[in-house]
Length: 216
Ligand code: SAH
Image (spheres, rainbow, N blue to C red):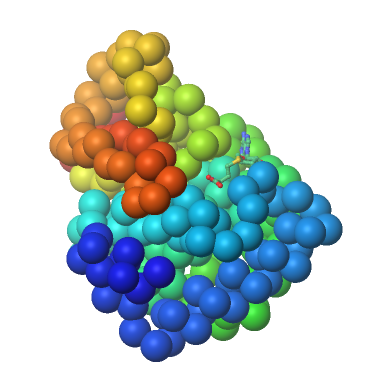
C-alpha cells in the first residue's frame, strides 16, 4: 500500500499507515454483516478503494481545507483522503443510515479530527439550503451522474472552489448531458486526468471543475 501511494507522490507516515490498517479491519468486520461493498478483502480491496481514493489527493490544492464527499458510502474517497491529509476538515454525506452508522464508528475508532458525518439525501440538503458555499472541494465517486454531481456540487462549493468527479473510462455521454449545467453555472474544466489503477487495471477519468468566482 505504501509503495503504491508513493507512486502517486504520497508519503504515508506511521500514523497514517496504522489508521489505514484500522480502517481496513473495521471495514471487513462491518462488511461481513452489512455488505458495504462487493469487492473482496485483500490486495484488490486496498487498490480499488484506498489507492483509487488517493488518486484524488494530488488534485486538491494545499490551501483547500474543507472537503465534502457526496454519496460517500463506506467512506470513499473521503476517509483515505483524510487519513493522508490530516489537516482536511472532512464532511461525509450519505443517505444510507447503515453506512453513516459505520462511518461514525470509523471516525471514533480512528480518532479522526474535524470530521463530520451527515445522514441525508444531497438534494434534500440543497433544498433546505444547508451547507451552501461551505466547502473548498466537493468530491464524489460512483454515486451520481456527471450532471448531478455538478448541480449539487455548485451549491456546496465556495466561489473559486473545486468539484471533483471520479468517473469510469467512458464519460462522453454523461458529459454531453452535463453541458447545460456546465454552461448555466459557468463551470470551467480545469483538469481532466485519465488513470489506470495498478494491478486491477481499473480505468478512471478524474474531472475537476472550478466554480467561477462571480456570483450567479
Ligand atoms: N462513494 C462510495 C459509495 C458509492 S455507492 C464509493 O465509491 O465506494 C453510492 C452511495 O451513494 C450509496 O452509499 C448511497 O447510499 C449514496 N447515495 C445515493 N443517492 C444519494 C443521494 N441522493 N444523497 C446522498 N447519498 C446518496
